[in-house]
Amino acid sequence: KKVKEANLNVWYPGLFRAPSNHVQFRCLVQNSSSSWRERLRLRAVGNVTVMLDDNEIYRGKASDEEHCIDLTFQKRKDADYNLLHDNHKNDTNNETSSSTLLVDLINEEEEGEPPAMLIQDGYFATTIDNGKWQWRSQKKKKKEENE
Image 1 (cartoon, rainbow, N blue to C red):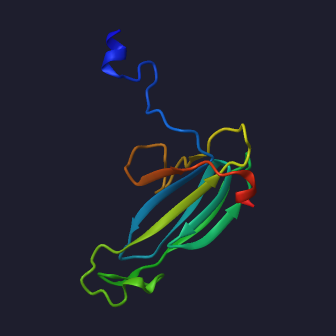
Image 2 (cartoon, helix red, strand yellow):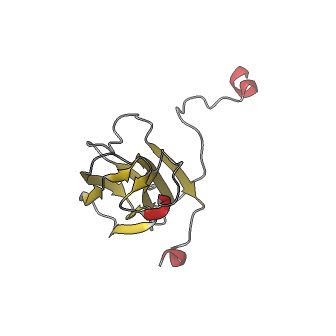
């Protein structure tokens, strides 16, 4: 009776959420004073689309195998300019310019597992709680809408 009155989610460690077959993970990457490369190796449940600053750089079908994507982040020209993207070219006051890495997952199986992602190591690792990743789920799409 006390549990019911307290309105607690007892025996479940997380928040209750509506089922979704479409999830997006986003990571902001601060521009660096030097160029760097990273091989993004991820395992995912669902079809994978990876975008860097609104440009699609990878698309892969659902698979038990790792998806491997080579990422290159260019040295910024000065304190507020990223050579990869000139969206900050005229903004001389912006000292926190960043790139956005987006991983979009859609599981087309009606009764399959929800979309999920695992990156075991490297800068983008999801195995530690480093606060880099944000996520959101979207309303469950019908199969015909995904094609």
